[in-house]
Length: 340
Image (tube, rainbow, N blue to C red; front, side, top):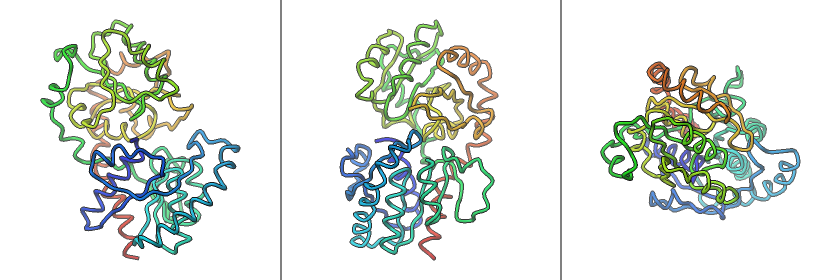
């Protein structure tokens, strides 16, 4: 239901526009919520996780044997389906997909954001580093390693303000500015704590919150969101509409939503340390459009964001077109592997 799924669907849509038929494979434990909402079916395989950017030597070692077995399983799936190219999406998905394709003798492309997927996939296939990858901000000489912004759906900018207003509860005040808080499809405890902090700050704004609470944080999150001036919307699949009524976003320092916000020319406050201490320095990737903040400084940085709102919007505009074109850029790299 998260950013990996959106990444896969958006790349597949761009490939479909080139006449490529796309099929999907998920880990057999995955709920496939977004796939179901889009009427998509999928194959199942095993995709062990080592912890992404939070992976340790111990978790990587533990995942290594499972990953090797999963790659063989995926190679059998590849031989059954006989695709022209395999696209391994992020972390374990990238490693299992690309290694499985290698075993099956099929071309592949790895979509990278973690140190582990970069370490493995760049040695065996063509890869595309997204901004969260440690490769993205490096000067690279390897011509098989490409860089691209996260592949947003270009339709993200054509939402309906009227539809979003219809979805709002009576507590929403159209004459106030609005802040959107999100840590992605999942609502992490530290992001919810930031919501509570701003709800008690006295800022005269609409406070909109999206995402499903992580099970381990659910009790705390429910407590954090009890303030009367918080509008909690849960899991939202009409983000393109919601963005139309938002003035400022508070997001995590990673993922698809920062790219969507930039595409919509919305200023971003990146709340740091929300997801297991990850740090990607996306303020440097989108200079002037993203401000970073620790939890204790969040009110001050949000006030600065509102003071610099139009300047930040102008800076977001500098990147918006490139972000909107990222899906097509990625699709072209993958399509070239098919032609080879």
